[in-house]
Image: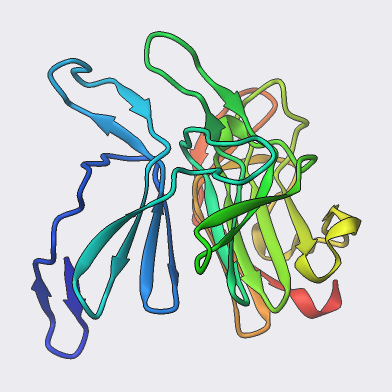
Length: 239
């Protein structure tokens, strides 16, 4: 659907060629929306369970049309893989995808949590492996946004005991790929944001020279789950 802000109206658009119920990665670039992977629910064979896919589609806004693209990972070092809960952001002429879970099949395997950063070239419809040693995420979930040449990754880690405690923000400069990921230093704890607690879900945005982080759930070491309305603004210029 498309929502017209001025008229306060909704319009039905062309249906996607494949029904994806959840966990897909969706990003806008140069007049098109790109959908990477995702999971299918509710088929007769799968009932209410899900299996991840490697399919990629492009939706053209002006033409109200969908087209199938090469499978996720085509041309990369790791090759084609399925994707669930991935992240994506645009820098220049490229779309960068990160993390997610590869190889998930309901009832068969939980898949592998990825720490790989891929660069997708929309013109060539191919992927390049940029980095394979990124920060771990809980079942692949997180938020990644871009500002200038940099990617900002917020890694919520829930109560996954295999990941170091406390949520973190990481930076990757696409203009200096060899430097890899670096953890943001000097994170401010003002405004009621407790960075000693694991933060899960919520939202993460970059704009107007700042990083905005709010909502979600927080976990203490005792496993207490609470919803938070804390709103944190980080002045990115100082990092």
